[in-house]
Image 1 (cartoon, one colour):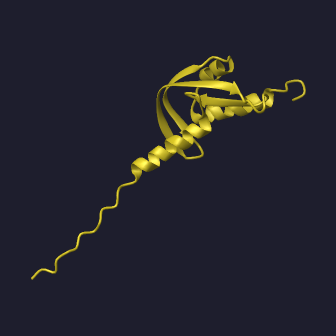
Image 2 (image 1 turned 180 degrees about the vertical axis):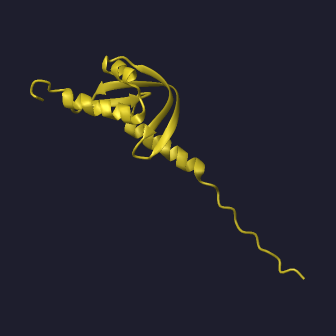
Amino acid sequence: MLSVFPHLNERLRIAQLCKGIGLAIDSIRHLFKGEPLSFTGKLHSREHNQSFNVQDAKLQLFKESKNSDRLKLTINGKNIIDWFKEQFGKFRHSMRQPIQPRQKKGRGI
């Protein structure tokens, strides 16, 4: 079957990725037409088990430079996997609270 439709497996992989991050079927179809998709909403990373807010992001599919049979999904020009790692890093950094030095307590009277 794959010899008749050689790019079908790769398109299914990308479609599952898009569905997994929370894109609607119409949005996925739009991406497969080769057109950029303007997106505002939440994208979910299964790897980080976290959803991230997105405002006016540009999603687009490109052929990989090293292997033209493979596709990559980008957000604002960055690979979606790298983008999720970056967003998760920012989230973790914002959750860290600085450690305050302990103050010495007086013994009292």
